[in-house]
Image (cartoon, rainbow, N blue to C red):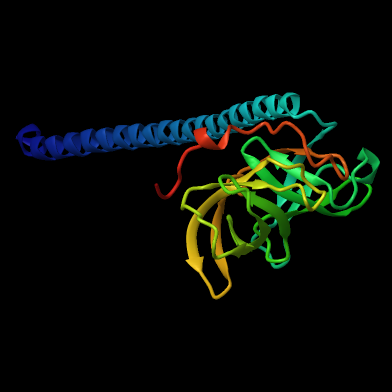
Length: 250
């Protein structure tokens, strides 16, 4: 009778022990799963960082190849440099190069990249130089239109954009027309690509021409430094105007 009476408590005790075992096993499996998930997350983060680093290295290698091609195509003694800081969005900011006076650099030397003109050197110290990009409000560059060869002055107006001034109203200018350096400022030789006309707005005595710059100033990392006061006429490394893409209009 005692065995019969104690059987329910034994069953309950057995079920409790079984539940405890299953719960402990579940907790152990859960902790193991959390550890595995954490390890997988770390692995994914590592692979993502590696992919980003590899992509940056690949992009910089491609940029270096294009820069080398530009250096070979341009018949001038140029020097390569790396942009180590992009401060264009700061007040009176610009670009900072990893070379300076000890590398033979000086103020008012032109800076270019494979896509087009970047700007000019503004100030130089021993190991660094600051560059005034074309879109800075205090930047001005001598330019000419591709079709009419009319000359004017490019003035920066903000990120990636500029305006051409001193172009007479009689000139016929089309949206998408390429804009090149004129060589008149003795900083750049004639014929380097600056950008494309994005808008034409007549004023009283002249045209107000808005320009989208060709050089990707937010993404450029490697540049070429032109020699001081280069000759006005050199063979430009750009595509002839007739073959350049028409950006923004017919």
